[in-house]
Length: 184
Image (cartoon, rainbow, N blue to C red; front, side, top):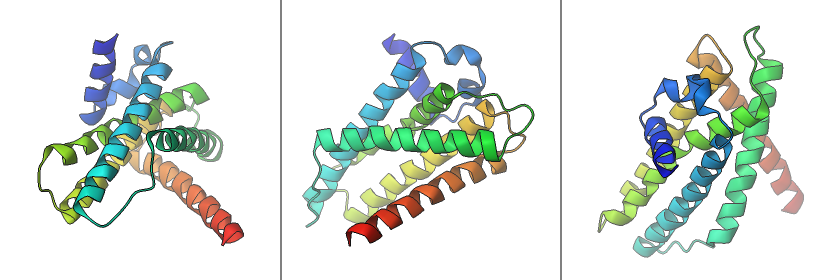
């Protein structure tokens, strides 16, 4: 069981198309593996934020519980938006994904974020390099997500998959913007 989880993480980090293209990888436990990856990603984020705080005057107001809850909410919102945008707005005749499969892909695609923990393992890493590495893991996540969305929605190009992701992120940005307008 743990070997299968490690294999999924490794293949996602490797940007292996077969991880997302093979229906055998979307069995009953796959959603739980995706949830474990999301929780581990939250842990890696807290550890990275703590490392950044240790090297700067930045003081993150984060706790493991709050970051985990936020991560799960982000996972749900992003997955639902990707499902709606990918299957309803950019629908193709071969598109036959269900919401559970999208949740699983989004979870698996977060595997590169686990590498954020490396910032703790490198002593004396300055703020700029740490932030660059964290940003790099985000772009790696986007690449993995693009491949995953392309495979499960049966799109003909990665550009269309990236467009679906970009639209989902823009919707999230607008929602956050309007929420901030209400409270500021």
